[in-house]
Length: 394
Image 1 (tube, rainbow, N blue to C red):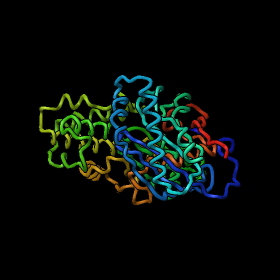
Image 2: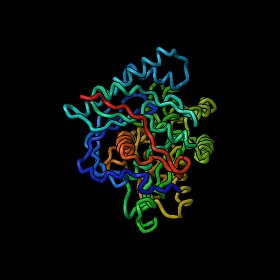
Image 3: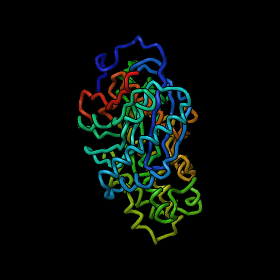
Image 4: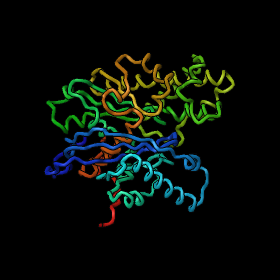
């Protein structure tokens, strides 16, 4: 277990003023930059965070070159450097929309994942233009320290989920329906020893589950010639094929049992190649949704059993896949517990990762390790994360 003692946590308890922290995130859909303004009060693991407002700013012409880079298509150094700078300037536009005339106290940026196969990972970003534009410090490259210390570098949101979603009486699972579905399991405080903060944090579990939007979006691109299945409408017109569902469940369960971060090469597009022609495109999309929905609660059950056992009282869903009604309803049917979007507890599901980035940025500023051995497998003690760019003196 990771022991978070006083040396690991900021000792500056004099910080009384709340911080306005901006978190920025782009996912595998590569359609927009999500930005969230989060008011953070306190410091260290005792911080309280409230999401004030969010925006999504389209990537427009940058989406295609980013996707080609993530698909490992060759590009020149000049093209990559130019793309990285333009991507940063698009972040500037997003934060300006979010903040108006206000200035953030801190900006935390994920960058675009264009390659992830631990120990190698690359979140593309040139952050200096953001520090210059807003005269605020920028923290980025949050995975690198974990990877260097033997971790998988992902998922990195669980300790932010602890800040945003922990509950005294409920064991909660937060499931992100992103390119890859991942989960955070937060035992109720009463499920841990007598409420000590470090014990509660060390009770956190999390990990990647399986390909999700990576697979569903690939079906939409290959078979519908659309970037994604808007609202799951095409899947809703199909009928799940039991043999295809069973085959895919086996493959996805295999991913869930790997115990590592999923990334480049795990998109599961080979299943599309094997299955196309055996049914309609709509049937294929529906079968994929049902298979993903079957694997998620099974994985949560496994994780809860290993930790306790104790029941999962509530599943909170977030991420782009939540917009797919077929996927959401299939998860509802499969699960044995309450399932609802994170919106219901004050965090917009579409911007949960951006909000989490803001929380992680504040923790980095307070010199709190943001990854846990129980999640990423990182060595002990967990490292301090983040690379910093500071604004010019004025």
